[in-house]
Length: 134
Image (cartoon, rainbow, N blue to C red; front, side, top):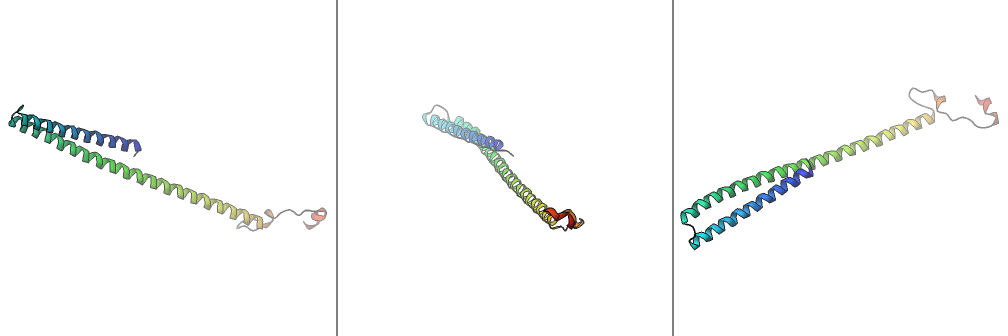
């Protein structure tokens, strides 16, 4: 999941909430018109039922969007945690390989290895008469 999807869902939630407010304002205007006598009570009742159904539908869509957003946020968080764990494992492996490499280098320098002859890692003697020691 991406931050873009979360932003889009948040935007959709905000838009739906605005639409709910507009519908509630419309219902309030209808109530005022009924009180002033511009529309009959039957017309107001029909408008109220229609608007109330639309408001309920919008609330349902808001709940679905919020659920989807929470799921996307959870998946994004899990992905970040998983990537952090993977990075930590890679760093530990890198350190372990470096440690093994250094250990092998020290073993060769000492002249002893598992399957190596000791003369391979010994340093050369320096000096004029060093050739007598061979």
